[in-house]
Image (cartoon, rainbow, N blue to C red; front, side, top):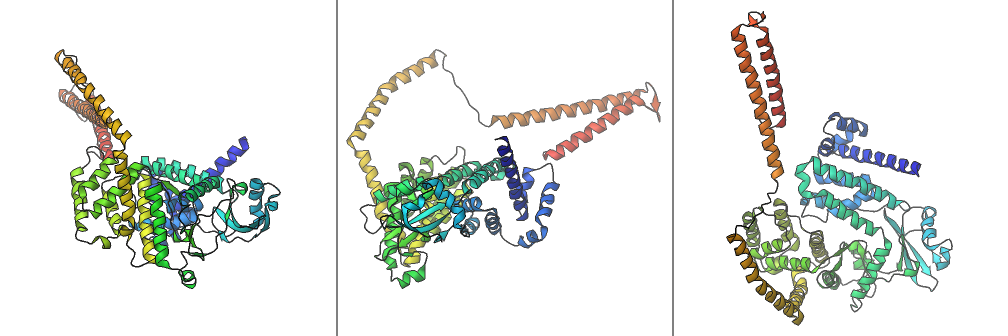
Length: 563
């Protein structure tokens, strides 16, 4: 056990050093220097080991391109992180999110001999008895899992999604290192604190850990099958739970063409306009009706069957919307459609996103200018990607941290609009979204008008009305008898106290130096005691001490940057 832990720590140290050396190699020395401020030669030392020539060749590339290349080289955990960050344009500028969206998670297929132990562990040594036939050559391969076709004993065509051996341990180790780096960077680089890196990594770790659990994906697929059981235009593949486990997912095979294959769509004579409408309604129903949605509606995650039915096939990344966030989303869309900047500000306030003391007046002005910019544009010409892109700029400027689910949902809507226009150039997203938004508003109104809700409202109002005179009388009585106490909590006072304490110390130090100088001057003029060059030695010593202390005081003040 002890040997195993030691080996784990050594691996973690090697991996940490590799990550830091790659940060230097790709030009992110600001991070490495901030982490090791007392050893300025450390970054240069690691850069020398990594090789300076490639780094120089990369200097002409933008920040986003270098970050993408860094994530590609560091492997699956960082590629997943890049894909996750590409969904957060509310935190990162478009230059970075656009580059990170190019990250692909493909990988060379593993020989089946290395993959078979996973099947043995999940289904037992006699796992082949569950299938009439099994293809050892994969039909798809990624860095987390690869997919194989098979035929069940009942003659059903199925696919097996098999997790790569050892990938979970690698990812968990990387996540631990990422968390430690996020904590250190937040402490060392104050300007990056607005990104809330620790919380970001925690959210990412939660999403990726669930994605590694194929039982969770299986339950999600069953949930979606139930939600869309009456929609004949959409088919959710059926999971075979008796053959599935945490690391192996068995589902029905779907024959058809991927939405990401334009030539295949043309060859199969797919009605892309109809499929665009079906796909958009499918995702909008998830968001506005069910509150559980696929957070990665990439074209490669959809198959069009020969009969024209749309079949989603990847449910690894799922978002959940509570009613408050759903109403906020509706409010955002309505604010732009109805040209109502005040509503946009109310949405932010309703989600408790505006900090006390923040420049809400300036924010309201910027939101008003944003809304007015689109005020003379017909609703049919409003592009969600452009509107939300401008909104993200305002959000970043005022350091507003959107809830993760809301941010992911906005990105899904942008991706959805892009997919719709790709399949149908005349696609109007807001026209498709209008009936779903209307249903949410009607449902909210019905909840308010519900008899039980109204009774509760009346009871609460009556309770407040009865308690108010008693509370007011008690307050006035305490004020009249001098028993009323006020408690003030002054936030952020610690920094002020420390600064005042530092200033008092400096002032006291300066007074001591001045006292030594004045005292030495009196001694020098008195001529008392042994002298050197006609000046009393005691006075000279005093002058020397005062000069040394004065230089020390001046250097310390200059180094603090607060002269």
